[in-house]
Length: 251
Ligand code: PGA
Image (cartoon, rainbow, N blue to C red; front, top):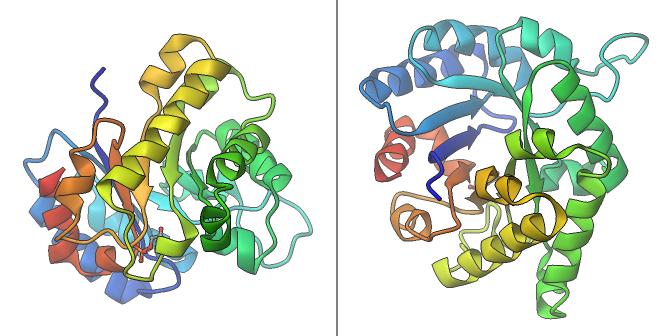
């Protein structure tokens, strides 16, 4: 089963409107001629309009890093998925480990956010991943299974088939400690089998599973050549547009 490779850049709280537009312009130029790999960047919310403008016509999509479960109302400081859609976003990052740990986002909230963004017409990238202590205690499969069950509760098979999952072991995010291709592939295979066991066959065939956690120009190729790794969610290295486009080329 061949799935279209998908490289995403999570810029986190970096690159204000001006800097983000410059990086986006570089990516747009370098990405011209790419018809084989899906690419999305996730700027901080205030940089979305300048990045959408800079990427116009480039084929590179823009997503929002987080949204509130409600789309409008008295929720001071929150971002709405319908307004993100109106601003030109096509995707939303949901359940990133920084949201889960720094903002106490539980699986129930992740589930609610997935429904909210899909209703608004955005496609989610749903992040899952175990901590270092979970891995050391050999609880990693149980943790991933629990996160998947909670995140995807009562979401129908067709909708799940359109979701992208990002396996991001927490111990590998921003640490320089990438999972080896064997470790990553083994978890991706576990996730795919979980999908096969939980839904009709076409769902597990369709869902793209990105790897995330210290992906860079040196390790991307070996990770991306694993059969169940369909792309990468790149943090730090995506801030450098020449590294990021190099990773897209490797995919
Ligand atoms: P990193 O971040 O590539 O800097 O490890 C990945 C992520 O947090 O999505």
